[in-house]
Each structure stands twice: as structure tokens, then as C-alpha cells.
Image 1 (cartoon, rainbow, N blue to C red):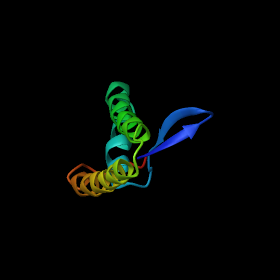
Image 2: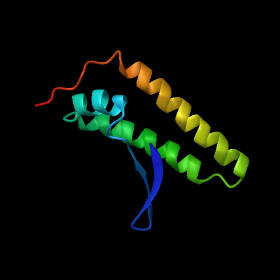
Image 3: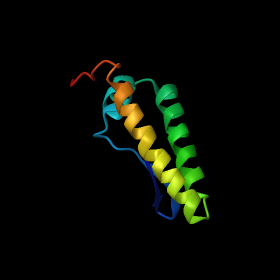
Image 4: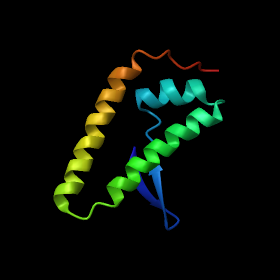
Length: 85
């Protein structure tokens, strides 16, 4: 995930090529509550990063984002692959 400013509003970009996205989101596309919950989590993380004012805090959030992404990629291997239908 990465924070974004879209049409003047705060938002978040999710990487559709990330293994977690492919295995979690695509397998749960019809479970609106579950996917919305994950959207809220990623949006909250992006908002927290956007609210940082100091360079040190910004670097810490960026490093955390990369670490979480790496861990999610590893954990996603335990999830079933998405149907390509």
C-alpha cells in the first residue's frame, strides 16, 4: 500500500500485483465486509503515514511499510491461489 492524494482527497493505492492482494482480495472479492475491513486497515495505515511531520518519522513509516509488505508476501503463500475465473 501507499498513501495517495486523489482528486484532492486522501486515499491509498494497493498493489494489485502483490501476492497478498492476489490471494486475499481476489479470493474474497464477493465478501464486501471483509474486503472493506482490509481497505479500512490499509487506509488507516496510509493516513497515519500522511500525518507524520518529521523526516525521521516519515522514514520509519516507509521502512515499516516495506517490512509489512515483505511479511505479507511470505504469509500469503499460506493462502490459496485465486481462481482465475
